[in-house]
Length: 253
Image 1 (cartoon, one colour):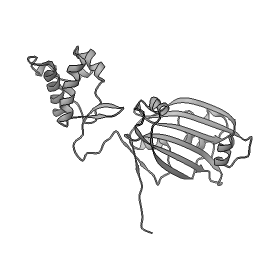
Image 2 (tube, one colour):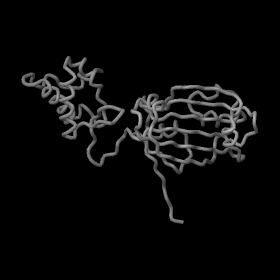
Image 3 (tube, one colour):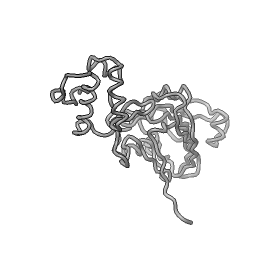
Image 4 (tube, helix red, strand yellow):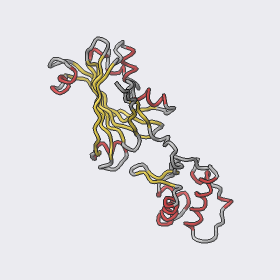
């Protein structure tokens, strides 16, 4: 459905400045909930094409709505219908840091649709760094998985995982969920150590995630163990800071 179809064009007067006409259309659509909170607006270029207006006119209309608190700009993501104060941002994902679960499981538990875009899948001899992290001997065989992770087609993270070859039968075992493939081979992780670090994205990861270079993010390093105590997975994930929250339940000892 085109964005213009979400607006009641017939209800707005066409007299006066064009930016006020467009601003009124969007304002009415938000107030009548034709545009729900959190809805992403098309890019300025797409709005120019759809409404046959100049970019200056489009920008002037949107800026007024941002000032009024009806729209919000998210750096590197675009313009969205703002949420009411105190409302939870459904576009963000809360990760329970005390539970051992996969990305796919996290998304499905929140009603989001997980998907991936492969950057690379490979196998080969372990590197010295991998050998140390996985507790393997030099020359051991490993599988490597590099991909972009999505929730409802929105980029969430870039993930680099390495698994010892004893954990899977073959590289193609991993179609969508790594943990699902490990479980199918009887090697699902039962515990893990994680380290979280605040980062600013470099150019390579920013391009992959469709965000701006130097945008804030989280680097999560996970080292997971199988039931027999051997390391089954080492993963480095780079999450967008504007889309991911870490939550932990704390107890008094």
